[in-house]
Image 1 (cartoon, helix red, strand yellow):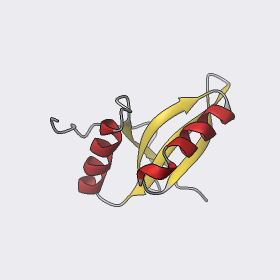
Image 2 (spheres, one colour):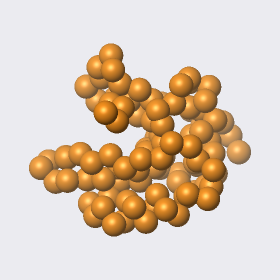
Image 3 (cartoon, one colour):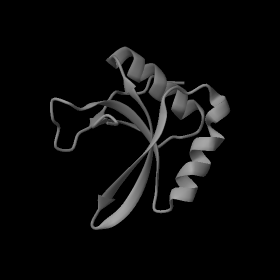
Image 4 (tube, rainbow, N blue to C red):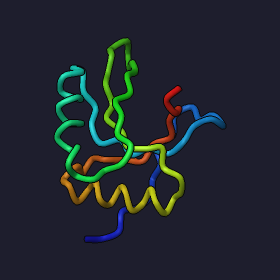
Length: 97
């Protein structure tokens, strides 16, 4: 498998943001929860569902992280892509409070 290029999606980045791998976005929390449960046995670390809004519509994003380094991010993204989440991407996001 070819190496995955590290392209980090950046919205309005702040100093407090960290790297995450996003591999699912849903309008229905049940679907996000189902995906999260489905990858539970895969050995993927630090999974979370992050709620947000786009165009006034609530979305639930399934993410891994925060990720400590660019090297770790690249390895984790490649693992997620091998699990057939081919639209997975690296993002900068606020950590959970």
